[in-house]
Image (cartoon, rainbow, N blue to C red):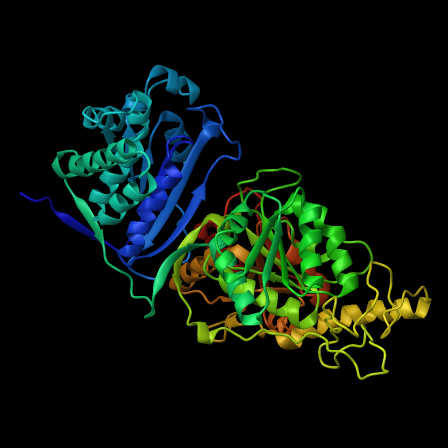
Length: 615
């Protein structure tokens, strides 16, 4: 007799275990199967910064949260409906995030005295009543796995135990009716060089699936119908992968080779790793000995006529700042990717923050304005990368693109765009002047104020470059005070003029009579959007707007923020955009600021918005 099936509109699942338990792989596989089901989804991987924290300890807990639904969603979710805890530390670290009534699946084999002590439990939570109020399923995942693999030759007892994550994955796939074919094919491909490991993981996966189907402990399974998304071809994508693909698209649309100079750093390294796989698109990747060399090589590639890009995170961006200033003086295109993480210094490398905004705006010597673009979701990272490249090439300037750790590692469905819909961002190189005329390397385009892009080695374009101040038009070295004042103002005006070449700030105010505006930038797009939906469902009026260009700001930004009685600016910093808005537009904006290394919960933002609307 088949078990009953309950229909749900959405589910939030968190897999948690020791950093060696394969939780990221488990969550990623469950996400892939969910994407194939056609659900809308959003994910939040959360893992320790240490390469290997002590096994079973609280600092060593690794987690992966997945929110999937039969409708449009914006965030990985606030509170999980289901927690899969592979050991006591995983239970203790995550239980506080669960609402009462949530389902908790625990690997009972791991709840021994040693592991309880490592997790700082005074008593066993499975026995002391502390889990009352939750639906607890005690499953012996480790011993079930070992028993299922008893006949597999060639694996050690340790390797058998390590397959328990696939046992948990099989159980969850049964519980939420996820397809199994993709995971079984994945196992065959990933572990093809170790057939015995592939066999072990396959058997562990099937053991978990069959346990769900036969155990009386799980009386009900659940279904979540596909979401109604815009027609087209989709794939699951992370922010870092989307940036890599966006840079390749920018290379194709600009008809320039793509050169990436990078030094590995969390959470930006995946962009280097992804681009290194695409030499067939003319991509050149250079893993430099340090951040300074990486940025210098990228700027040199731009000088040579390529689309020069460099990637890093906060501490690495600090080291690149001198070269970025050189790029400002040379007036050459350069895209600098800052995948923000919690600081200062090494900080919390795997955790997200928005604390680099003022650094990329002002963190250079001299007056050296640089355009800044910010991505707002994993999928939107693709278009943000193209936009940063477009501005850099057209205006011959370094451009910062800001992402952060939550966008870099988070994933969502991505509607693969029609190539014909992408903008042509090609830009002409300088050509030799008429015979007898001198080449004037700083004679600017009247519309953009960009100087000619002269590829070295081109006959007739010989000129001097460097970090010393240039004479207007001729490019000769100049110490003339008035010329320096003029060049400072020209470089600033060039960046300011970009405001006429970017979209106006889009305002979401359905009835047009809200008196409170929520203004955000970067990865707060999803949490703010979900919070505004909640507040509107409660009958309150609130408007929202989200900035994708931080320098220059959209030309209507002042009109938008001055059009409301109250302006709330949530940021994962202590108020950096808030300072800019208050100083530039003289509005009494208020910040909602948390610097916890975690994305905002939409529920906390909804409370803050409601309080402001009602005040």
